[in-house]
Amino acid sequence: MTRVPVRDDLRALEGYHSPQVHVDVRLNTNESPFAPPAAWYDAFAAELSRVEWHRYPDRAAAALRAGIAHLHQVRPDQVFVANGSNEVLQTLLLTFAGPGRAVATFEPTYQLHGHIARLTGASVLEGERAVDFSLDLAEVRRVLAAGSPVVTFLCSPNNPTGLVESHADVRTVLGLVPGLLVVDEAYGQFADWSAIGLVDDEIPLVVTRTFSKTWSMAGSRLGYLIGPAWLVAELDKVVLPYHLDAAKQIAGRLALTFVDEMEARVQFIVAERERLSAELAAMDLDVFPSGANFILFRPRSMAGRAVWQRLLDRNVLIRDCSGWPRLGDCLRVTVGTASENDQFLAALTGALSPEAVH
Ligand SMILES: *Cc1c(COP(=O)(O)O)cnc(C)c1O
Image 1 (cartoon, rainbow, N blue to C red):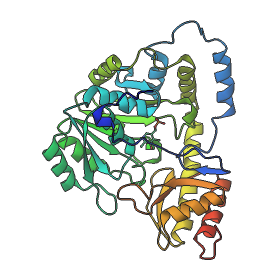
Image 2: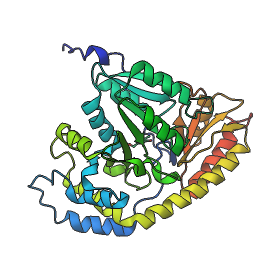
Image 3: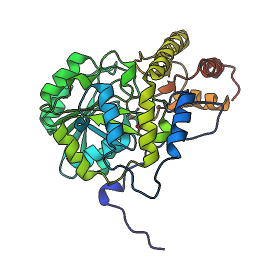
Image 4: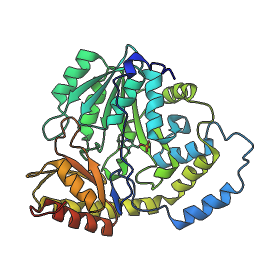
């Protein structure tokens, strides 16, 4: 069979992969270790049985948008919802990026920002963060002046480093961008401030959020952004019609009625994160401070990849970032349940011991 050539600009592109391996302790994709509350399952099942499956779902997802708007004290026309915040990012970049346009990222950061930008045909300007992974404002100025990107990405807390951008830095970058500033707040509930408070119809800022992490809803594929109403109207033109199925709209709307439970999970995870960080800091590792539900660390005396494999041999899966640019030997662990974290710590102690058998 003859293979049809893909677009020239996609030929060299690598896919985005996060291995889905069956192990006892899965701490590699920053999901919540807890299922949604039992009452959510009951309410969801009851509403599902009333869905008119022969009809298209509400195209505007009005009830879900209204729920999100209420949560953040914004207007529903400032909310755009999609299938995971990755589809939010894709829709944004289909609308504003594309051939002949540039998108800026500050590395290391979430790889999908640059990846999706490239898929739209845009070029990606990769600025560098400082050695401690903080934002270097001189570098930001240089990149923005040199390439005039139509979209500039920040991620706070940043994945995979865990660093929370300061309010002052975000405001400074907002004053410098020649186009849109996108702040990815997938882990926003773990931070002590949110850029959502800066959103205004007259300001070129959007903030993205997801149901995949703190809302314990990774299975639902639901994410959203808060931004100017004119921008949301443009995205509504680009996204496919009826892209949010009926079940998903119900799942998300009901999840928002369990805010207290979500916040309790966040508090628990923060406490566990502090415990894990302290334990890791006592080992032969460099540990990066985190304001999220994961911790980046680097073994001092062993290759990161070898430690990752030894953990996998002990039935613990974490994220191997060692092959990513600027993250040589780095590994990232998601904070799990107390028992999962204990199992991870025990496995890591074994993996780091010189006599460890593979
Ligand atoms: C996990 C994550 C997302 C979430 O993507 P979804 O498509 O909503 O699951 C977005 N941005 C960052 C930085 C993430 O880590």
